[in-house]
Image (tube, rainbow, N blue to C red; front, side, top):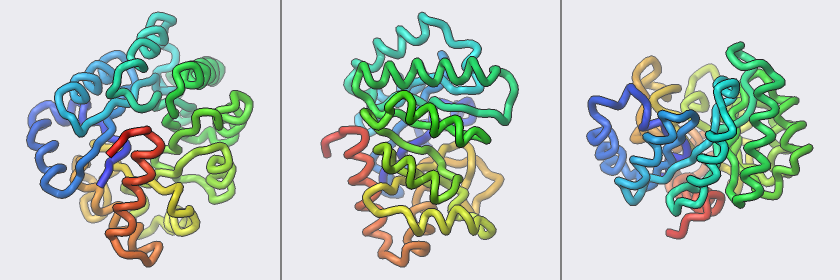
Length: 255
C-alpha cells in the first residue's frame, strides 16, 4: 500500500514515531509521502525522507498560514525541490474555513506555488476547504494541468472531480470514505476511474471507521483500501495495486 499523504512530522508522533513507521511496514504500507506545509513541518518531512528510503517528502505552504510565507520561504521550497526525495509541492490551495490569512493573500500564495511547480516540474497537492470554485478557477487560470497533481482527501462533487481529472489531477480518498454516513463521498469514489484513484491517511487526522476519534497513522490506510474495495466491488488486491501504481506515476517514483 502507498499512503500518499501523511503528517508523520506532526507533534502527535513525537513520542513514538519509529514505532508508528514500523507498524506501517508490518501492515504492508511500503511507501509514504510525508507532507510539510510550513517551516517546521517542512524540516520534519525532509528529515524523515532522508532517514527512510521508503519515505518521500512533499513541501509547500498551507493556505491557512499563507500570510506567514516570505519570499525567502518560497526560494527555500524551490531549493528543496531539487532534492531527490522531494516528489511534489504542497499542500497548497485555499481554506475559507479559518480566517487567519485573507483570501487574496491565500490566492496569491497559491498562484506563486503553482508557478514554482511548473518551473521545477513537480506535481502539486491541493488542499481545498470551502473554496472549491476559486480553487478550480485558479488551477485553470494558472494552467496547472502542465504538472497535474492530487486533490487531497477529496470530499467534493463528481462534477468537480471530473473537471480536476481533465486537468491531469488524481483524486485521493482518506478516512471519510469509510464513514457509515458518508453517502456522497462513497458515490463519488464509485465513479472515479481506477487510473485516477489514490489512497491516503492525512494522519494524525481523519481516522477511518472503526477508529474515529483516535490518532490516525499510516497503517490504517488499509481501512481506506478495504472501503474502496467494497464501494467498487473489486478485490482488495486490485485496489492496492492500482492505487500504488497511480502513486508511483504521479510522484515519478520508480519501483
